[in-house]
Image 1 (cartoon, helix red, strand yellow):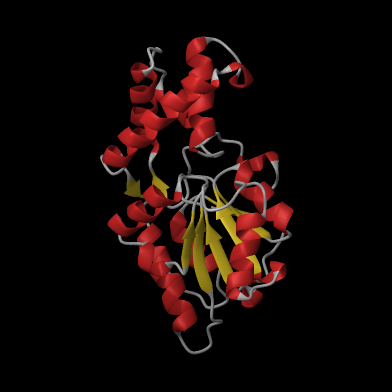
Image 2 (cartoon, rainbow, N blue to C red):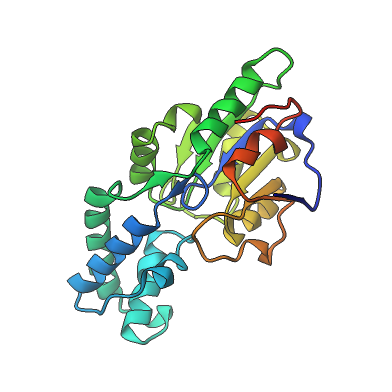
Length: 245
């Protein structure tokens, strides 16, 4: 189902920027397993998977910090920095080895990306670039995209450590616009959480919400311009040329 709150000028769009976790891929189990491995490593009790998944979206350091805080019974601001450093270091080490144990592309994602590329390579299509902007560290983000066969669709893949700030700061999105020559009104941010919608707002671009992600379920806190329930709907809502995956 597609819910339109503000129609996108699809004929003008030149840059499609995708979030990764909860938008292109379901990485919840591997992230949860890695967090619990880090908690065990520093002598803290494990947490339920749905609780850990609700912390995803603001970057790996904050994911670990929030999990440590809950497992210790304190606030994130009270987490000891040495403890945070040890837990985060182990999380990265564990996740590096286990990032693809259970992670997979959502149904219809690869077909939708191909359809979007083919539509705008075809006569009558508007030339467009596609990119990824995630708060996940860039190295695992790129390797996951490569392993799942989607890296080739993107002109660039940026992660949470590609810049000095993370989403919802608009720096990454503005960098992608500068690199591709796209103006704000020609750009759309596609993601599953309030962080992605707020990033779009902060950069003055359009936003497409994906209501099928596993994250904090706060997508509607900052209203997207458009919401879809499946990646299979992307080609139809992002193109003036009709196609189906």
